[in-house]
Image (cartoon, rainbow, N blue to C red; front, side, top):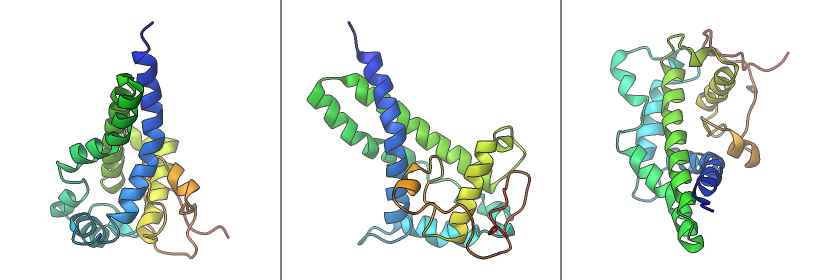
Length: 191
């Protein structure tokens, strides 16, 4: 019996969970602080992106020339997918089950594409079908709070790592002038 597809499904499921922790780690340790001489991710994200997009009305794109600061550079996706696939490739090699790395590569690619799509829609809303879903609104509020409190809510796609690693924030600690819109939930403190 060929277990390739079973291992592929296992790899996909594990990659989605792993993706949350990978995203959290990259976001916290590379995108919010310089790591030795490697400052590219920190400058592109914490310095530029967070300077342009805050938690107030500037959470949504105001100046068209800032549109390029929403997504990661084109080459970041392949690099991140390759790096995140290394553990799965090692385990696949040890087990001799190449479906595991195949499924995980599809899972990590899907996770990255979803990250870019959701993040794009958060900062450049256009009443897309995706933006009308309950899940998107929850994730959008989660990300909005990250723009208010940069040391919280590092996940964009699946806040599992935020929950497990103690960085999950569901509501603001104090009132602030937050972004508004049909896909932006109220994240103000409860009265």
